[in-house]
Image 1 (cartoon, protein in one colour):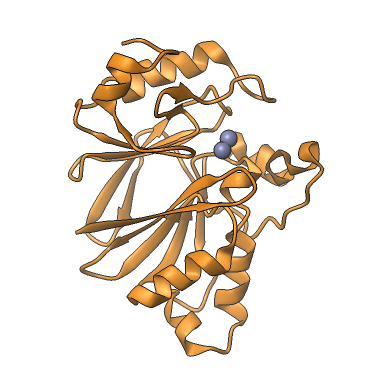
Image 2 (cartoon, helix red, strand yellow):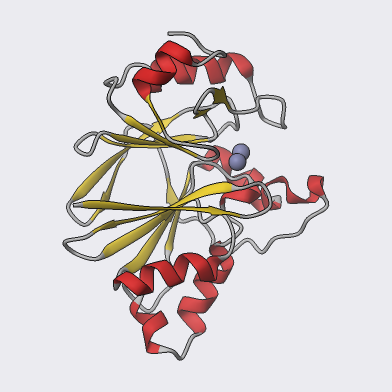
Length: 225
Ligand SMILES: [Zn+2]
Ligand SMILES: [Zn+2]
């Protein structure tokens, strides 16, 4: 069964989702936003092993905790920390290649006068239609440019949940005025990749509260169905 632990972290209150297949204890972090230790502690407390970090996009507030997670898991002599990782290697990082330049540029952190550690190099190049596995649970990758060129969302049909990053929020949509943003692409991504999903699909986004596809189709003031 899919378990989802939402955490609100970092300077711009980013939603980070620690997710796990509770049968196998395999865990992943969707957008390890900030405070790697906080995320790790939640996994350790449940006996979960974090093997993968999945990025919806490469803005700094969505992966600022990655370096701390990786270095703690790899350097810690504490067996409890080691247990939180499935192997003795770095967690695997998945990112769409079109956001790799943004990642290399610290996710735009310097624009805001900040510096962040990059953490492990992304080695899984996400592509539209790709299936990601977490234990026995499958997630479909949907490429949704507009907020950034390489933005993706993660859809689990079986659990009726969409992790929508900064594409669409409860009553809002992602900014398209940052470098690499594009309003027409954002609108098209929402219409074609989100509004086509069943109405009851839960929407867990990168900022703000929970919603559903149906609620946003009817009430989102920016993109009407
Ligand atoms: Zn963003
Ligand atoms: Zn964000």
